[in-house]
Amino acid sequence: MVNEKGLPSEVADRIGEYVRLNGRQDLIDKLAGDVTLMASKSAGAGLDAMRTLLKYVDLYGITDRISFDLSLARGLDYYTGVIYEAVLQGGAYSTRRLFSC
Image (cartoon, rainbow, N blue to C red; front, side):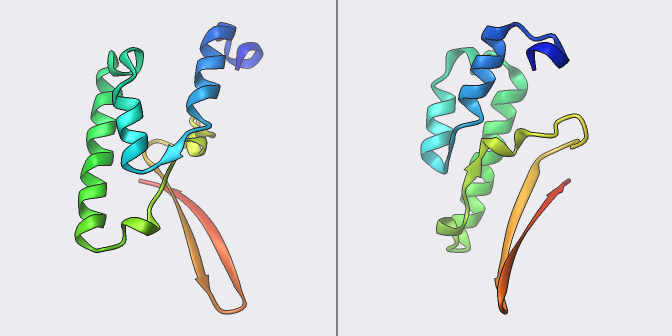
């Protein structure tokens, strides 16, 4: 990020901290408590969307099957929206698929 994108090393380090995070409501709460992150209007909107998704998965009783993984932020130069990863299980093997809306 520093060499290719020209970001200051402290910004790259901060991004590195974020992409190590994952979780559910605990992750949302942690990110919502980050003053620097919450200064971004789009970050707040993203957290609101995450909260909404968790409400829906809770209604369907599948909360234990959902996890937010910020390491999926890779490839931001070609993904244009939220990145979903589905782990499909069945048969003799399971597969992973990434897709964006």
